[in-house]
Structures are given as structure tokens and as C-alpha cells.
Length: 495
Image (cartoon, rainbow, N blue to C red; front, side):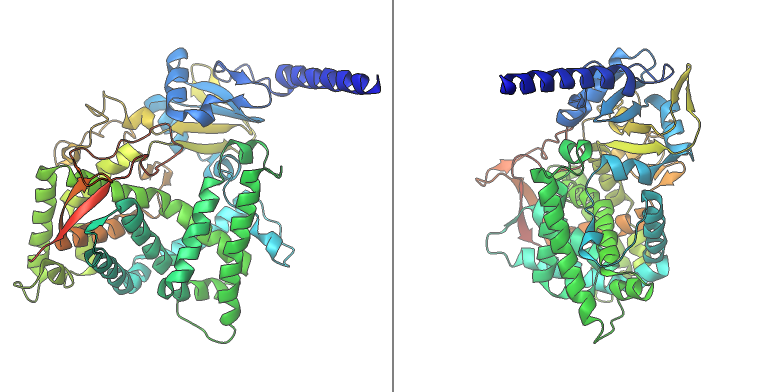
């Protein structure tokens, strides 16, 4: 009898909580855009997590203004669409990027729990600290000073592919890892760059951290769920790797990024947080984009020929030995030329970004007033704003045949992104990508050397030749590896 009473009371309490939560606590302001169908109590809009791009398209089509509202757990989100929505999203100073991602990404673990420091920082302070250090690492003179190490890393990566007796490489492993190593040269430690065991350990636990992100960690951030435990463990292991390096620095100083952070007064856990932030900002996007660009070039004889001819022309302009192998001629190409002299390679990359960067971006209204969207709609104070990049990148009125990889979209006089903020792959407005210059450099460097080293085509895991690049799952939460394996069959070039 007592068990039945407890059960009945518990169910009644749950029903009352759901009703109060739905009718009062989560009741949106009357000026927010209309709410989507399936915005469930406690959980919110499940489609936001399970089929993100389809969810956005459907919700947009049911809204008179194109804008709509929904919940992710207890968090109120307002999705903006169209050119007017993009301008509000990217131009508003009240919409803070750091506050949006700190809650809705749910990926960076609380590494300070592993440290004896008694520091408590909010998302804004952490972001300001991150940006201050990032500004140092993306200064052009600093990147130039690290460029010889980066070039040597790319050459070593190409030699490893060349010496693989299988004659094939998975670009979503090999090229992705190269991007990771270049980021380590930019903002990691020399120990990480020189010892591949340390580098592999960092990459492994970073991947674990990325996989742990999702609905559970956002809706129930402190609940000891399996994703939460994975995230915590990955953070602990990354802390251990960095802390061991930091302890050795008491015996030996090095001229590298970790030493700079230590000289700035950062403790081990802050260095881990910075490194994780760099990898989330620079690896997930650039690693997938660079790999996908190779696959697209392998399936497009026209653009493969254009890009390789561009590499030959640039290399020939600077080569001390014009009769040497093309990759050795590239060794003489200066830093500035890798930034500016590869427009065809850049066009290939840009359309890869347009296709792969199909994600929702987040901000939070940190002001005390509502932000007007027009049509009487607003983003309330404390609410989150979101914009799905596909709203622009998949708009056929901007990009004809939007799902087709076509670098000619960016040819001089043709540029298809002339509408306001039609290409947002590098950010825009008041929120541009600060690392854009470095990202373009590293991908020009990798693509140019790959084209100089190899002729190549696409194959499946059985060795059958493929004519099309990997299919992109637009419902993923961001750039990701294809569901089926694609390999590049490589043949070393004589010249």
C-alpha cells in the first residue's frame, strides 16, 4: 500500500511539474517568434538534436516570418533566417558568441578540478583570456616564425604517405592529422610536436571529448551520464599530458607556445583549456574541409589540372632548381606566396567550406533589453540566438545547384556571394573568424604539397574507383567524417 502511495504521489508530482514547467517557467514572451511543433516539456525540440538541418528547414517553412523559437532543455532559443536575420545575428554587439557556445556546445570539461587553484571565471572572462592569447598566436610575424616548422611537418606527412606500401591514404585520417600537427606547432608545445606518442594521445582524447558533446551534456550538464563521464575522463587525461610537460619546464625553458603561456602566468589547467579551444576552433572545421577538398579534386579532372598547374607556375617562379621534383621546387616558395599566390586552390577550399560548414551557430543576448528582429519579433534578454549556415549556403537563389561542389562560383566576376552575408564560412560582420589567415595558409600549404607529390584518384575500401566525393550528412552538428570510407589512391609524381 505504501509503495502504491509513493508511486502515485511521485507521478502526480511529475505531472504537476511538467504542467508548471510548460505553462509558466518555459512560456516564451509573446514577442518571440512562434514556437516549433514538438517542443516537448523538459527535453525541448528533439529534432534539433537528431536531424538538425531537416529540423531547421521544416521549422522555417512553417513560420510566417521564417524565424522561430524552441527549447533545448531549459534553454530558450530563437532561430533567425534570411538576410535580415543574418545581419542581426552577425552585427549585434549584444549577442555574445562565448556565452552561446559555453552552454549549447557542452564540450570543454572543467579541467580546473584537477588543479589546486581556487579560480572561478565566467564564460566571458574565459573567452577574453582565450582571445588575448589567440591574438598573440595569429600575429603574422609569429606565424612567419613558425612557418619553417610547419613546412617541415607537411613534407614529413607527404613522405609518410609516399612510403606507405599500400599506395592509398584516408584523407580524413592523414590530412586531418596534418592539420592537427600544424595547430600544435602554432599553439602547442615542442614536446607534442616532436613526440608522436604524445601527439597521438592528445588527438585521441580530444576526439573522445568531441564525441561526448550532445543533448545529454547540454540538458543535464552535471548529471553523471556516460557522455559526462567520457568528457570528464578525457579532460583529466589531457590535463595529465600538459601538466607533465609543464613540470619539466622547471628544469628547461623552451621557446614555444607553452612557454609563452607559462610566462603569461597560466597554470596547467588554463593551458589545457586554451589548447582544447584552439583544437575546437581550428581542427574540426579545417581538418574535414582540407580532406574533403582532396576528395573533390580527385573526382574533378578539370579542377585537379587547374590546381596543379597553379602549383607548377608558383613553384617555377621561385625555384632555384627548375628541373628538380615539383615538391622540391615548392621548398623555395616563400611564406608570402603561400598566402597570396594560390587563388584556384583557395576557390576549391572555399566551396568545400560552403558545403561542409553546415552547422547551427549560437549567440546569447547578454543585454537587459530585447533585440528586435522586425515584424514585432524579438530575442528576449538571456535567450539564445541561433542561425543555421545552410540558410545561406544551401539557398538556390544565391548558389545555383547548391549541393554541387563548384569552385567556379568564386571566379573573378562570378562571385555568387554578393548578397548580404551570403557566405559565412569565415564568420562575418562583427564576428569574423580571427584564425582565417592561418587556416587559409595551412590548407594552401597542404594542398600545394599534395598536388606536387602525387597524382591521385578516389577509391572505396575494396579498391574500386569512385567518381564522386563522399556524401555529406547535413544533419550532423558540424563538419564530420563521411559514413563510408573513401581513400585516395596515390601515385608519386616524377616531376
